[in-house]
Length: 497
Ligand SMILES: [Zn+2]
Image (tube, rainbow, N blue to C red; front, side, top):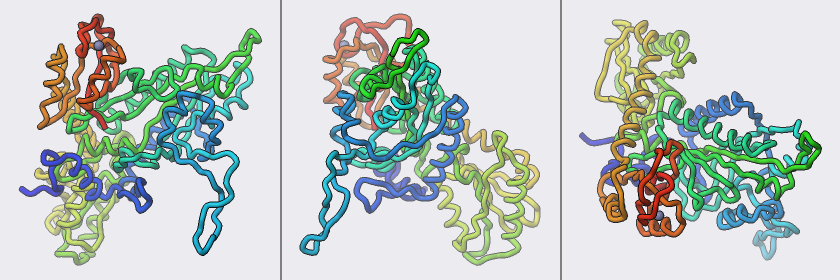
C-alpha cells in the first residue's frame, strides 16, 4: 500500500523527517535564512507543551520573569569558558541605524560596545541577580524565562538546529553548593517525568562528560532520547554552574555569620527541539503521530458528505457529537479538545490531512452513523482499524482511548530503545563493529569508560559521542571499552542530532 509520506523512514530517514514536517503542516524553513516559521499545528503542539512545562516550573517554586534580548558584549566576556563556547555562533549587533549612501541603505551609527543577541541568558540574568541578592534571606532565587534565543547555526535543520528557537531557561541562585546541586537534579527529574508523561518519550538520564558540558558549567546533566534511526536527541539539559558565573558577575550575599560569599547558580532548559524529537520518535510512514496530551486537537470529527458539498443535516450531527464530547468527556481530568472539520474539501482528503498531522482520534460520521446515533472511530496508532460506538459510549470511553494511545506510543518507543541498546560490547573491536552496521538502526552502546579525554578522541572518526553517564550506575564497572584501562563509570555512546 502506498504511504502518505515519501520517502519512507526505511528509505531515507532525514528526507522522511523533512517530508513529515511539511506534510503535517508543522513548520517551514523561513524566508529569513536559517530560521523557521512554525505553523499553527506545530505551534499548537508547542503551546500545549509550554503550558504543561510552565505548570511544573511554577509548582516547583519558580517564578517567570523576562530579560532583554540584547546582551552587552562585556557581560558575555566575564566568564571565559562561556564566551569561548558560544563565540562561534553569536549574532552581533554593531550598528543602530541605516543611512542612504548613493541610493543604497548601509548600516550607520556604530555602537561603542557591540551587543550580542542572547544565545542563552546566564550573563544578563546574572547582572540582575547581582543587584537583587544581598543577604542569605534573598536566597534561593528561583527564576524562569520563556524566550527566543539565537545561535548562528551553519547547517540549520527545522526544529533541531535553527538560528532562532523558542525555549524556557531556568536560572537559580543558592546559598550552598549542595542546594544548587539538588536544584539541578530536581529539574532534571522534572524533565524526565515531563517527557515520559506528556510526550511518551523514554529517556536516559545522566551526566554529560566534561567535553560536552555547557560552557562555564561545573556539571551538565541531560535527558537523551533514541530516535527511530537510533540516533540520540538531547532533549533537555540541567547545569550546576558552581560559582563560575556568580564570581564573574559578582553575585554575592552576606551569610548568617556576616561573611560575604558568592552564590551557587544553576540553569536548565528545554526547547522547540522537543517537537523534532516527537516527530522522530513517534512519526510513521503516514506522517506524524502526536501524543494525545500535547495534541492541539485531540479529536476531529469529519462529516462524510458527498464530495465537497455541505450537507447541513450531517454537519448538525457532527456538531452534536463534538458538543457532547466537549461537554462531557474528560482526559486526565481535563475537557478534551475536539473540533469538526467542516471545510469544503472532499472528506477523504480531510481524513488524510488529519492522519498526516497525527491527530490522535478521527471520528467519521456519515448518513448511516447519523441515523443510528453512532460514530466510526479511527485511532492514529492503528488507522486501518475502525470501531463503531454510540455517542454515549464515546463520551464515556474517550479518555481511556486517548490514554491507551499514549501508552501504545510510550511502549513502542521504550521497545525501540531497549532493542537497540547494546550492553554486550566489551572492547574496541566490538565497538567499531557495533557502529559499522550501517543499514538499519544505529545503536546506543552502554559500556564502561575510563573518563579519559584521550580515549574519547578515538570516537571522532565514527561520528559517535558520549551522550551521558547514566545516573543509575552499577556497583562496579569493567575495563574501558575504548582503551582497556580500568573503567570508572558506565557511559552511553551513540550518534546524535
Ligand atoms: Zn579509556
